[in-house]
Image 1 (tube, rainbow, N blue to C red):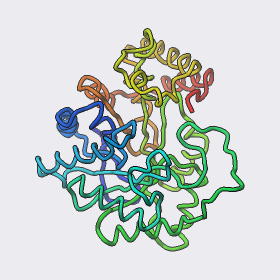
Image 2: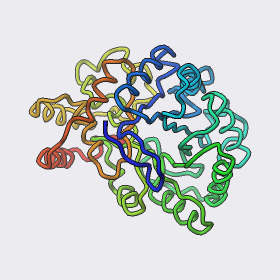
Image 3: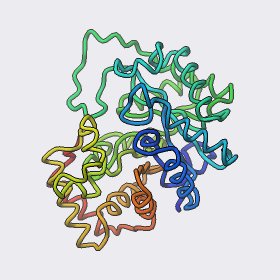
Image 4: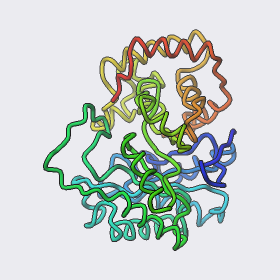
Length: 346
């Protein structure tokens, strides 16, 4: 395994992070615990979860992932060996079952953190993240920003930073990050934190993969210059970049076939790009999965690559990608392929 630091902290994390959103729906507790055990045995010390997980979100399974992780900590007595990240949801009518007070007010943050800590059976979360913005902006497959003149959101960046700082002072979190954010939002957090002399976000968790490199348009420069690390999620684009959907639409139990609402990457242009990368991986003599993950691992603005799996075979292949080194020649060829089908997945 390779390791890096959460920027501007003394926390060392594995370059590969174990994503857990399938725990409690596609994976049982026993399977989730098996994944955690294997990940730790292979050098991973970083686990990412969220209050809304498992995914797809629904009332019956909300919080199940945190509970499974909490039961792992209780059983193994090793909380201090793990860097734990979780998230608080932003406003969403479809998730109103999580709590009445949605958003990032002090009341909402206090409610969310206390419930997460209880499920996780821990006194603190190392990295607490805002799952998506309160304001109207581009995230979760939205393109072409459209400003809403009747938007009810009020600028509250300083208030949110202050609320999170109170959690730090209470010892409930060590640091905070943001997720599904734009370059404008990230810079506002940075500017406002400077004004009130409080910590800026140490990470941003956004999608990043071979068929969605939109992070590079503006956010990668911000992160590099401001020393804020990317936690890359969907590095395999919901499994498209394993190549399994190229064969007769993929297995019936594959995620995009089970959950049609998660199909934002699944379009004709994405399929064309995946085929090009698949052909290239065969030329190199490695799997498309390993090519895709090794590419994300190679980016200097990526702090950690969040992998996810529904079975042990997938998990083992994903983790082994840390040993795949891509030459400059290979990276140049990847850029040439991207030029043919630039960012087909929103």
